[in-house]
Length: 288
Image 1 (cartoon, one colour):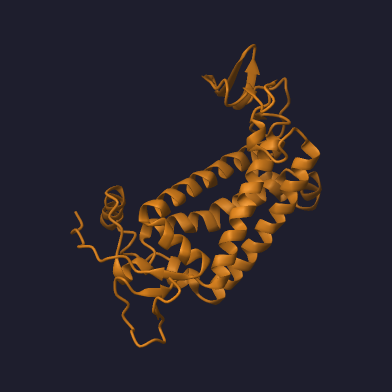
Image 2: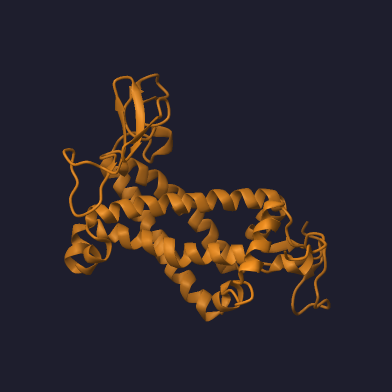
């Protein structure tokens, strides 16, 4: 509620308690978060549209219809399939062979509702993808810069040696598995699982997606030939790009689930207005 008392470091209460409303996220963090939501969704859907042009993945420099892919999504007869190596999974109705909104059967890898545009157009898919790739890159670089300058990374995300201890890690994993989330002022701090996952996304997955995306560009390969050496060829870069993108999707799914379990209204409010109501305190279980 807008009439809730807002507790800040400059306010009369220096030790916020359960039930207090505090300032949690900076404006820059909130803007970056929601821009990323839009960018990642459009990048994924336009990327699937691009993938539909050649729904096979290879390792190395080269890959064409005559070469054996390590992953393939397609249709054979009246069946759709996902094949990884020698293992084939039937996906009729979902991948490889599906029915569109007009009742027509399609053998594209991903259905039209999952792609941008909602029909097959490699040129338009690339335009959408490249534009929002720049949105992601420029926003990411700005966030990196501000996060280091205001010491957000060093203060809030860098794990301590005690947090990395196997005993502490196992304790946090058990607490999350039991849905025991921190309360009171402790809810304002990232736990070690959050820190590691955010660091993985910010400094591994996102840079990997950007660099492998650049490696698939012939112009960038001419300008930066070291990219091909780094990833072992354009087809390997395409495979790594695909894998990293789906790992990012996995992170997003887990993130959304955890937000829903922790209290979606309170969590969403904190990412829209920056105001967060501290949840009730819980009794800490001793580390095992």
